[in-house]
Length: 116
Image 1 (spheres, helix red, strand yellow):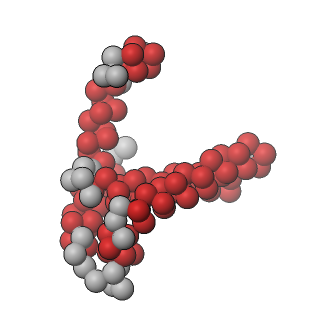
Image 2 (cartoon, rainbow, N blue to C red):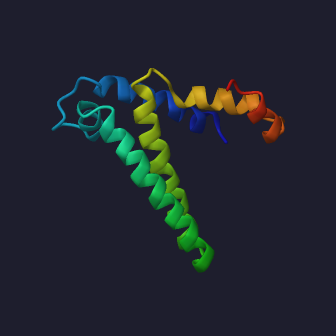
């Protein structure tokens, strides 16, 4: 993955910040913010369901088109999650930092170490 690919999180964060108080008629992101937090959260759920269905379809199709749909739906989930997270001043970089922290840890051990 190129540095430019990783920078997309910073660019998206800047875009979200610039649209936080924009006219909802002028921007999809502004429209989501105007109905926060519910609009973005509902879209996360909707897109997550579409992602699951794309994965199930890819099992049957097992072709490039099915794989492209999985990637497209994953991008939709990530996008809407990033919009929702920006409400709390969190970015994709925060998620990458957490994944980096978890890298190499046993999933069972990591989960057991979380506060209850």
